[in-house]
Image (cartoon, rainbow, N blue to C red; front, side, top):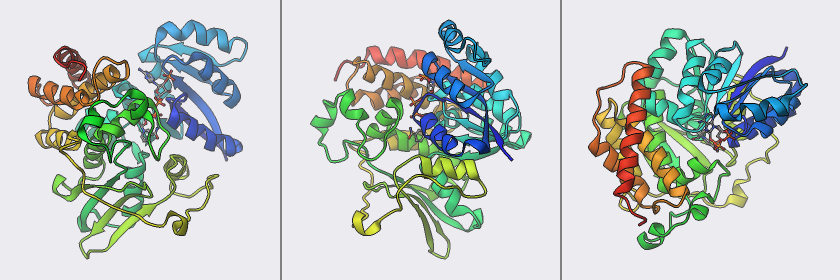
Length: 387
Ligand code: NDP
């Protein structure tokens, strides 16, 4: 029997990996809704190919293009932020949350409030909303399947284990493209260099986050919410080969690790098939060819993002949402050539220092903090010249 699926962020990197798996198992899935921001033509092609019922662009100004590209297809076209939530509210067996940034928060919460099963790639949504989202998941009986490779690895390692037996959860980090660079070279890094990740092929924003190590900082916060073992039991180790995707040590000092190719189709397949397994088109792991797996401690002098994120979640309240919003603004500014690479984390830290807000208790609170933090980060940019 086929299952229904909605893909929020269908035109992105996670979207493409998910649709590749759906395409290979076409008879098992019925596509309900596909969304994008403004890639109207690409979205229309996908909606036609997969026979989606609904296609939505988040940017309403792109709706005429979407309508034109879908003319005669029978696919319903819609646009705007509310339309993204409308797509996410439609009943389906599986929602893949793969919009980038806090823009994915409201649609992801719409799927949560429907009590859906959600494959969560959109880490910024959970980082920003934190306890607000986790409480809503419990209240509405939703299921979050961690799709980020590290969290999916932890989820797999924990299966069959008890949270109270966990001694430590360790997130692995590739270290990004600048792991071996010195401070001067990192400072002069260009957007092209920052998006060229050595192991993973990803969207521009997460690639820059990987280069600053903010991606690992956001993942640390994400892990705290998904696997509440306490911050003192959460760690990060740099593992440049990206073969071990994360590990869990239990109190008897037994450590379980999940290994696999650096391809998001592996964790996505684990979510799509959960609790079963499905085939992927990937080559088997050849450890003899890989040769060695190495590890080192993160260098927080050169890459302060993990420290900043750890401090933000230790502070709690509004801090993770402020950090996320400021980072999104700073990454955009870096990608558009407005600021130098090292200023990204400086802007995030400056925004955290300058803005304090009460702890959010509703989605509206989180969105208001996000919006204000973006304004404050834009102000901080003015004090952050090119280098
Ligand atoms: P991409 O930039 O490749 O794709 C982003 C998707 O979100 C696109 O469909 C884009 O549409 C849509 N989008 C962007 N802005 C908005 C908006 N304002 N409103 C509605 N839709 C929007 O990102 P990735 O696929 O790389 O990442 C998606 C999420 O998954 C991120 O949160 C990332 O951290 C996470 N993730 C990604 C991994 C990866 O390997 N790529 C690994 C682990 C997690 P459009 O094409 O129109 O711009």
